[in-house]
Amino acid sequence: MNTFDLLHKRKHVRKYKDEIPDKKLIDEALRQTWKTTPTKNSAMPYKVFVFGPDHKKEKELVHEMAYNCHVTSEKIAVKKGLSTKTEEGVPNIHYEHIKNNPYLICIHAQPRQPNKHYKERIRRGMFFDQMHESQIDNFIDTSAVEVGLFLQNLTSYVLEKGIDISYTSCFNRNWNEWKNIGLKHAKYRPIMLASLGYAEKYRFEEEADTEYWKKPEYEEMIEWV
Image 1: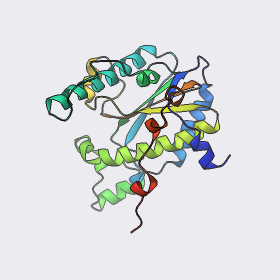
Image 2 (image 1 turned 90 degrees about the vertical axis):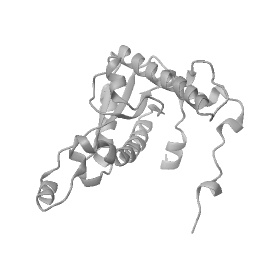
Image 3 (image 1 turned 180 degrees about the vertical axis):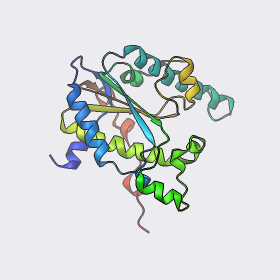
């Protein structure tokens, strides 16, 4: 299968099967991703936490965080006059994959120490911002771009193994809020969530309206200059 056909298979998962992919397959895909994902200054200024089948409580807490963030954002939009009403707390079923999955991935920012080459560069005057906690807000954009590359590579490797993946970017970015509800696995702000498993049902199977899935046209997105 060529790359286009492989990636075209990926769909948002509405529900995962009870069948659990072998941990060895997930670890292999993660190692392949780590090996092939590019990074500025060889830093990889983020950390990937993997919650397996035994971490149901943590997954439920992350799901609750995402749901609360969704509700709060609607209320704030109304307060600012950007929207006229909320969905009144109706649960978003498309977040269900966050808590009902074999594997949940939470990716957070992470300061990194430089390797031998960059230590020498620092000695000569280079500023290696990724090594400083105080600079997280400055290098978070770089981290986020690299996390996107990491997840895209991971997507290819798990799809090759017949495993599905879904993403979520709706959650509280303030790490203290995570810590306050018992999620203490990391020290720095979250960047992205992803779930892995074998899909039983995809989101598109519940949406008959093709306009629901319509992206901006190619010509709107790509401009040759």
